[in-house]
Image 1 (cartoon, rainbow, N blue to C red):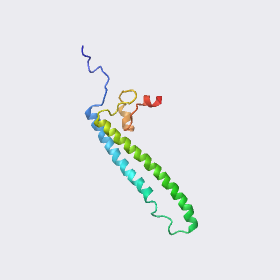
Image 2: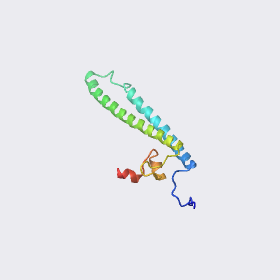
Image 3: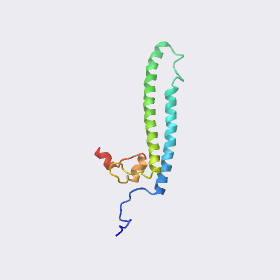
Image 4: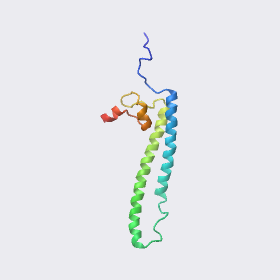
Length: 130
């Protein structure tokens, strides 16, 4: 006897739901790429408004600050790049129709979580077990 599909737990999001997530992720991805470009620009071109015209004693001090700022910008850029990669991986999962499925439990990750963390691959339950 065939089981009624209504009683079965939903195993994946519908194509319409996946499209909704895709649009949200594409928006976030565009913003993330803009922010990444700004951060990279800050790292690559931090010599603008530099200390070329100031006295040598201030130059040494500001070079230390500049190098520290460059390092922080570099770390922020690296974090942003990782976020971009995670969003792009989420788009691949949407195309494969595996988006929103917890990689540990195999259950659907709630929409609320995916709206907050669109690149999530773990349910809160699985994440808390780690």
